[in-house]
Length: 126
Image (cartoon, rainbow, N blue to C red; front, side):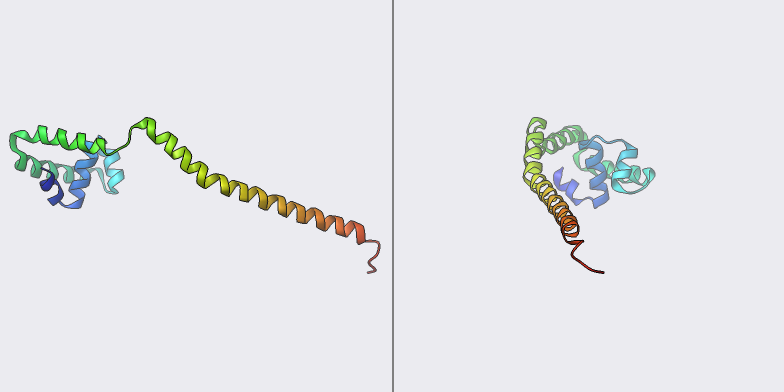
């Protein structure tokens, strides 16, 4: 079944995965595939016909197994958020600190320039 799925054209593979594994509707699948709803439906129908001809009466069993295997590729939801937060902390926090340091230095330079102008304005003849 998987060999037959891999042998399908790319758009038919994509249509099958979006429909069977991701459980997306026709409109959302067509948006994900960047094609019309009718074209996405045609790709899905062609994929289903090809896979059903290979699997025969065991199509439902093979399709369910493929869907379950696909779902196991994703980490559990409770593990995703802490991982994303740690990545964000490692990458975003240093950039925020650098941005704040840059602003502080810029404001310091402006304040220094104002101080110099106020201090030496009486000494400069124009």
